[in-house]
Figure 1 (spheres, rainbow, N blue to C red):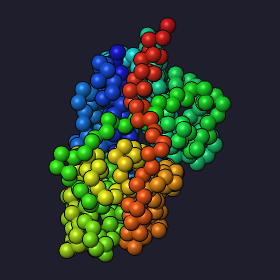
Figure 2: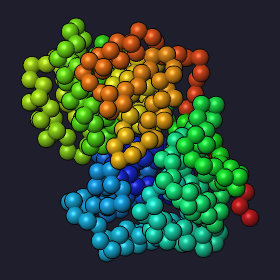
Figure 3: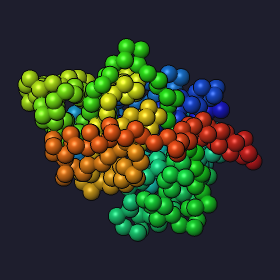
Figure 4: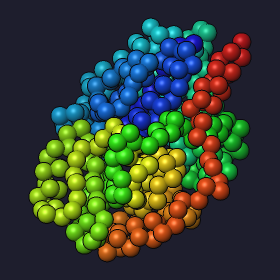
Length: 380
């Protein structure tokens, strides 16, 4: 079958990472996949088997998701946005997909509503009509106003055959973060978590015994990195390593190395073998994005979460609070992040191995493929 997945990440890169995991699962099952990516390119992400359509890229102005900037930092004007929409619709017409998946929309990316609606109009008018699905993570940013939830419900009712919720309902249900109406409840399909296969230990045991501080693939985490440097300076007997993400991390690394001086800490760009390093790390210190949380659950690494909460963001806080009830995990708020508190949290996390009593379902990508294909095969 032919599959079209549409995703735009505006700040961190977690949305793109999850969409690519889903796209690779379709490709492994023998399907032709086009992934339309509307955020900044992330070169370290694997794209094997997937045709990536890079739209004119957008990013947010920090946590202001209502202001869209081009790669060069200028405001995206109407012509720029129209070019994106034209590329999406032309690709949909040329591909004639059997399955269309929009990542996050209509539960987020409201600022891009026009291009999503134009695409949905095009694919809905196609004959045969493709199966149209939304793809959402375990926890959404709760709507700030009731009418936003109502608008999402209306868009789902008009265009969508289902909403793939990439969560294990035994651990996290969508109702914990989003007002699920009776009508929406009938469209929800829980898939399990969308995660790559476990990475397994690193062949060189890289990171053995270290405290590994990271903040994903985006240009965030500066406060966490500064606290990690000061913690490393005070934390005698443990080696710390900081992995810095973003499209161009070198300037941030130079500033952090100047701050670190002779502190026992290694500072380097985000690594493609990060998931393997987790198997050897004494502890992880990170934000609490969807993908990082799953990596840690798979590896069984003790962890301290400092959830991203700028601009009123609550998604990571909800996830971190839930995970911190399990052995081996601790949570610090950004407001409470000090070197001393970080050292204490790391020590406490390391003292209790993560519990294995509840094993989440990590086969959400394969399950999503099976669900989407069943729906497509059942089309009239």
